[in-house]
Structure formats: structure tokens, C-alpha cells
Length: 225
Ligand SMILES: Nc1ncnc2c1ncn2[C@@H]1O[C@H](COP(=O)(O)OP(=O)(O)O)[C@@H](O)[C@H]1O
Ligand SMILES: [Mg+2]
Image (cartoon, rainbow, N blue to C red; front, side, top):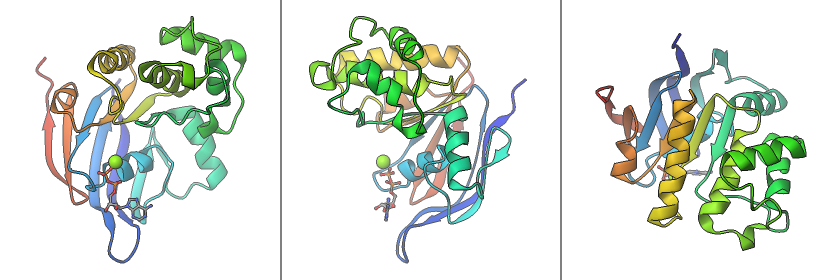
């Protein structure tokens, strides 16, 4: 059964007196849906992703993720909730330079927990990096580093995968490998939210959201094909 796995209600994020990054935002996302978030630089895309991903809290409003109101959770509760529900994929891969691919996945530093080596190896195989387990980031291509990041995001099999410009630092060929991987994860039933500047990547979403000045200026459902 599909249900709304992400519900954002009247969310405001005020960084300082002058900067209102999100301005009374409302957004619902169905389980299993692929949503693209687009908009000019500074429009609040990363702020919105961070709030959905439980990395940041809104100044005002309500956030309900997978039936749980996350606004009001204490820091350690939020961390545990994130570990169990959210996978994060960044434009900058945030890998630790002196650790191997396996160790980087084991660290899963955003979850503050150690992961089994067996699970880490399995996740790396899943993204086609079974032959790069012992490589440090410096000896991996950009595309491979991003795949390590995706492997790390897949630990704990999160229902929701969030990606902020996942192909922003990659050439076309490596970008396509990453998008193919995201497509597979979508087919497996993950809910996918991708922030992108690239209109072609935006079109891959079943739903497109355009942010301008912290407000949704356009929403489009595309269940045609
Ligand atoms: N930690 C922060 N402190 C103060 N202002 C911030 C912070 N993070 C983002 N902003 C501001 O909030 C607005 C939205 O930023 P952001 O969400 O990063 O936009 P986008 O990802 O769409 O480029 C911008 O004006 C940005 O300068
Ligand atoms: Mg951003």
C-alpha cells in the first residue's frame, strides 16, 4: 500500500534575521515515489533535503517521516531514526581519505555506528565495487568514490534515499552509472529524492518540485510513463 512517507507541513527555516531559507513550505511524497527537487542556487534545496534527512530541524512547522513526527525528537533519537530510515548521497562524497572503501562503508559516519565488514562488502558488491574493496579514495575514480558513498547510504536498507546533486562532480559516463544505480534502487521500492540542476535528471522523477526563494513555485506529477 502506498502512503505519504514524507509530510512537510508549514515548514519555515530561518537561519538569521535576513535569511529565511524555507518559507512556509508544504510537500508530501508517496512511498516509492521518485521526486526531483530543482531551483536556482540559494533557493533552499539543500536546506529542505537536510530537514527531510534529519540532519537539521526547522524553525517552525511539522515534519513527518514514515509516520513519525521528527520535529521535537532529541538529538540521539533523531540520529537513530536517521540510521533506520534515511540514506544520504552527497555531491562531495565525504569519504575519509586514509580509509579503504570497506572501512569507509563500515564507518558510515553519519550514523555514528560501526557496520559489519560482511555487510560493508556486500553493499560495495551491490554497487559494482567488489574489486575495489581495499582501495583508498585517492585510488578510486570520482564515479567509484560516489559508488562507495551510495554503498554507505545503503547500509541498514533505508526506505528513503536522499541525493544532493549526486552527479554534480562526475563526467557523463560515470554520471550515467550512478543514475542507473539510483534507477535500480527506485525499482526495488526505495523512495528517492534527488536535488539537481540538470533538467534531464529532473525529468527522471515522477514528481518535480521547483523551489524559488524557499517556496514551491511549481509542482508537477508525471505518472504517464
Ligand atoms: N548554515 C547556514 N547559515 C546561514 N544561512 C544559510 C545556511 N545554510 C544555507 N543558508 C542560506 O539559506 C539559503 C538557502 O540555502 P540552500 O538551502 O543551501 O540553497 P540551495 O541548496 O538551493 O542552493 C541561502 O540564502 C543560503 O545562503
Ligand atoms: Mg544546495
